[in-house]
Picture 1 (cartoon, rainbow, N blue to C red):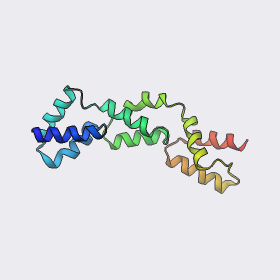
Picture 2: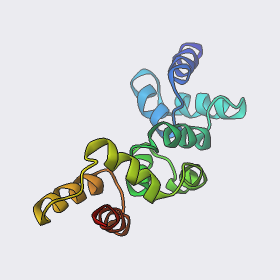
Picture 3: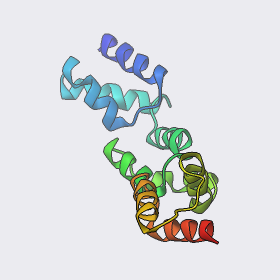
Picture 4: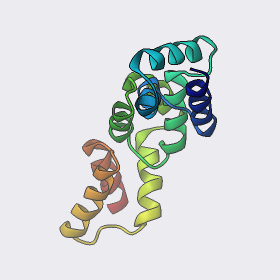
Length: 142
């Protein structure tokens, strides 16, 4: 149990983890019951927090990705995507973030429909909504 706790604390020292992530990483080293006990103890002590893990992830990746991508990544990490709502709103509007990402990658107005589609696909892959992409690329054409 002590070794399992030390292992969990070492993982948490590197970065914030969700309860699900930490349980998955510890699964090979103990029984399910031992893991549940250690995770509950860490949560009680304030060392493990899903809300903190979601906030840290959004702050680290929010400037590069849209809200849809951030929510998907949080789901993959076993976090409630709604935990990130407040964090995402602090990053600025989605249009502003999309403009920064677009400027770093392209910074040139799409010359034709093919280039427009290429830029739109890039932004969509980063998780920006279709409405935001249209507004951004329409603004850049004006």
